[in-house]
Each structure stands twice: as structure tokens, then as C-alpha cells.
Length: 235
Image 1 (cartoon, helix red, strand yellow):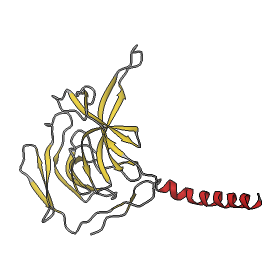
Image 2 (tube, one colour):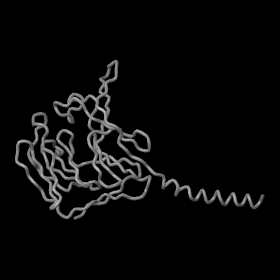
Image 3 (cartoon, helix red, strand yellow):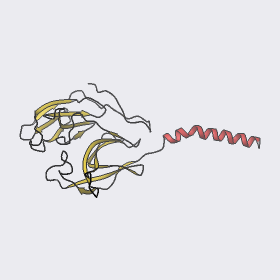
């Protein structure tokens, strides 16, 4: 009995020591489900919807078999383990005193999803504004037209996942909220070699900018519980 008891204690000790390793190796899954359409309009999303939009295509973001977010639009693979996709928000649009709840859908911020860790990080893109910003991704770079803090200057913007400062911020024109034509800009056009991006303000000529000496700053570690790490950009 004594030997068996000691052996049991040793086995329990080994299992306890292996538990962190077993937990760390637990696989995660992050998938987008089937698309469905929901009612959508400028009335429900004044800054995000285009004048003639009536429906929004949304997809569930499912992590480890559980619904975590609703998403809108296409996703973009950053690496073989992480991707970005735009969040879709279901907002309570009821006024005080309304007898029934009224819900509307809005386009939300961009999300960085790590398939290996099963984590979601909200991206804070500089000068991003849903009224004018139509993001076009290349690698871990986001190109879009943005509004400065006053809301009266339209800028050509390039942001990078993991960097707090924009890689490019050049003024295109002034912007008058509520009166200027939407969309404000055509989708940006990327070129690989040499690396450059082209912007075109609606009604004006296109302008291109070279991006020299850039590489990825997104750090993907093996921590299954931590948030996505990042490093400062460098040339």
C-alpha cells in the first residue's frame, strides 16, 4: 500500500506539472460563418451608410464554437494565423418613452483576429472616420482617406498594424460635413514594386505616394492568453 500510495503521489505531481503545458497547447478556432442580410440605411447609420444602401451583409465571427462578434464586409489575411475584419454593431435606437425596442445595424471598427490564440483586438486607425474611410489592405498596411481632428481636412492615410503613428498622412483637400459628395475617395490602389499607394479624391486627379523601407511590425508570439503584441515601426 505504501509503494502504491507513493506512486500515486508521484503520478499526480507529474500531471499537475504538465497541466500548464496541456493548457498552452489547447488549439483554438476562429472562423466566419455564413452571411446574411439585415436592413441598413443612412437613417440608422448616418456616418457609415451610403445614401442608397438598404441592406448590409453580416457574418458571425465564431471563436472556439462561440459567437463573439458580428462582422461586415470582406476579411483580409495579414499572416497565415491572423486576419482583419470590420465589426458590425447592433445598436439600440429606441427613444425614451418608446413602447417597443428599435434596433439598427451600424458598421463598426476594424478587428484583428488571431486564429492561434483565439483573441480579438480592436484596431485604432489614425484619423479613421466611417463617413469617409474605405480601408484597402495590403500586407499589414491600411490605406484610406481620413479626417483630421477638426473634421474639415481630408487626408491620404496609411496605417500599419502594431504602429501607433500613421506611416503616411498627406492632406488631399478640405472637407465640408453634410455637403461634400460621398464616397469621398475612390478605393486606394496598391502597387508592390516599388511599394506605393494611389489615392483619388472624388472629382480630382489621382496622386501616388512611395513607401520606402517598410516591413511588418506585427509581432505574433506563442502566448495563448495574452493580447497581440506590437513593436514600433522603423525604416
